Image 1 (cartoon, rainbow, N blue to C red):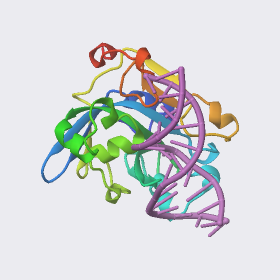
Image 2: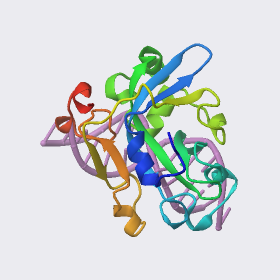
Image 3: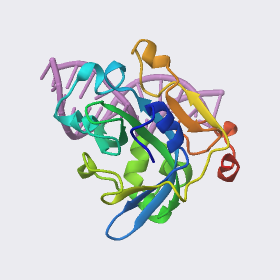
Amino acid sequence: MDFINRTTEEIAADLLGVKIIHETDDIVYTGYIVETEAYIGKHDQAAHSFNGRNTKSVKSLYCEGGTIYAHSMHKQLLINFVTQVEGEPQGVLIRAIEPEHGIEQMSLNRNGKTGIELTNGPGKFTQAMQISKALDGTKLNANCLKIDTTNRRYPKQIERSARIGVPNKGIWTDKPLRFTVAGHPYVSKARKRDSLPCAETWK
DNA sequence: GTAGAGATGTGCT
DNA sequence: GCACATCTCTACT
């Protein structure tokens, strides 16, 4: 996976279907990415790095591509993969996954929830997979959080739409920087009548 | 199942 | 104090 020599939008689209792996002491969680959002650094009013903002909490965004940026929000934890070269603060937010291994433990982590409620939101899948803020600033595949681009899947169809939870940000509110696997039931805010069985959304 | 309000913690101002 | 890249619950269809 090349996190540097492509635009952040291309990377966000290519991450759909990639296998994400989190190894803990007791169990290994895996799943497939089904929803991402691109944040385009200094020019993007919705990005934490807008206008070159560089405070302690966003400094991971300024690292080189492949670094993990973890940000807490309303008691939740959100995970981004940093893109581009060092000093260019762009990244891809991981919003939802289809769980594969460790589902029973995910259900316990999620207070007994089952089905799509396990991982169909950015704060939900981090809770289900027990991802911790300690990963902020570390690199992908260097520690317990990894991606597998060999045993990955490929979406039949990719859908673009405006990003979620980004109001009043001028033209950036409506920009189609959100990428989803078309029809996938684990995509956040999806209507159930619009979704297909998981197996039918992959090539 | 859907829509809307309230609850929350962290970090910046 | 306030703004948030959110979640959950309640009330209603």
